[in-house]
Length: 143
Image 1 (spheres, one colour):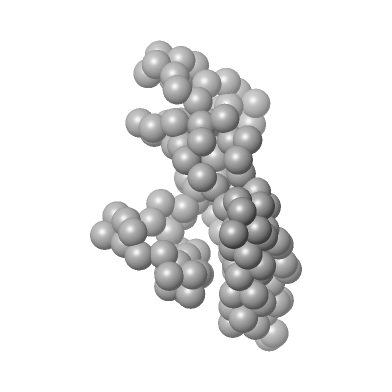
Image 2 (tube, helix red, strand yellow):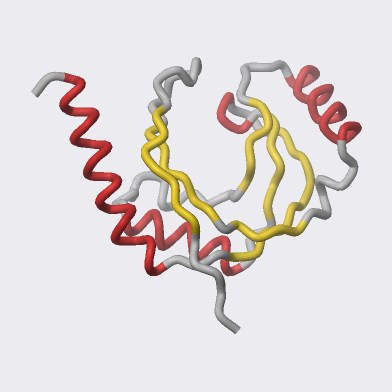
């Protein structure tokens, strides 16, 4: 199988799995806790989300469904990345200050997560190898 066939097979297989998980997921609330900086390229500057039960349960369900077992001992840290980069601590601090200056509400935003996307994210720091597999809208809660 050539590499193009492998990618198409992998993408098709992931899409099939995504379709089987879709009925079991519902839209859920999220709340931000503020902008933070991390120690790696992948968590350089990000908006941290509250670890409410809905966020954590959805993560655990998806990780289990897709067979993601590596780093299961590492606690899940829900976040939305703002910047991927290899910066010095001083540069990260400046980026953090700039993000907070752009919007001082980063620490107090509430919204509903009503759509999920599935990406193949190889560890390529150029991000050029990233491939969006699919996306779907989550079912709304019935009250």
